[in-house]
Image 1 (cartoon, helix red, strand yellow):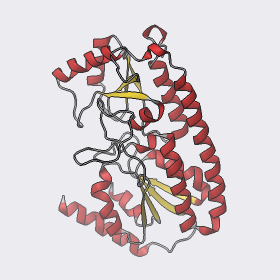
Image 2 (cartoon, rainbow, N blue to C red):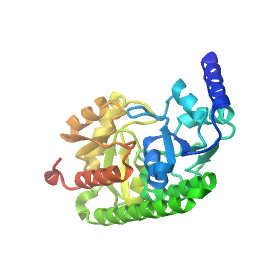
Image 3 (cartoon, rainbow, N blue to C red):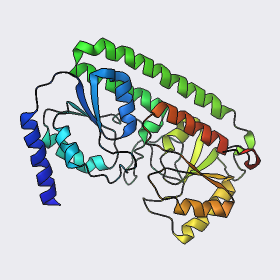
Length: 309
């Protein structure tokens, strides 16, 4: 592993030695596909974006490929977002391309603990011993803040197009604000009986495999129940407990993202006579995906006899 890392760094340094001075589009590297959406909406034809985690891969344990590292040598800006693989790789990126600006889009956001059972839907600042939820982009309210940072960073690197970036940002911010208003109104229409009597906090619950949607739940007054716990598949005893939790919460639909196995989810679905429905937190078209997933969540929170997928 040490030899492999050394070879990657050497490859990047060699590429950096021949890289031209800044000119033309701003070369931006990002961790995940939704970031690419934001950067391209704001930067338009003035940006060239590389995504480190490709479709179908998991940002929890991804290792960049040599070709990605070589392209990173030409980057003017890296936009981190707090996904797990960054902890090991950002220092290497910085050493390999010292002139590249590295900016954390999640810095300054209110973070919540990642949990499927105890803290969903409530805002918390970080505490010792808690694993904070990295899925910050799945909140339109967070996305507005991140869009501000992207606009400012592009304008700093490429001031000649600052007015263009500002105009593109305004259009994106208008779209995000309209989405937030739409979803607030959508979830306000949920029937009172969507929260089962056992849900003492009165929040309607949805079940997912991986706990990606905590910020979404927080924003719209919902409760997320996760199948996966601490990054592992559920044991048989976990499955029995989850089936009971789903019945108690009135859950009839379980959402799974395409990057994970459906095996445990399908077992729970059989136990509650429910359905398995896809919900991808890493889709590139962030705006359309958020709207589609929100409508699927809303549909799942209706009484069982009203579901139609």
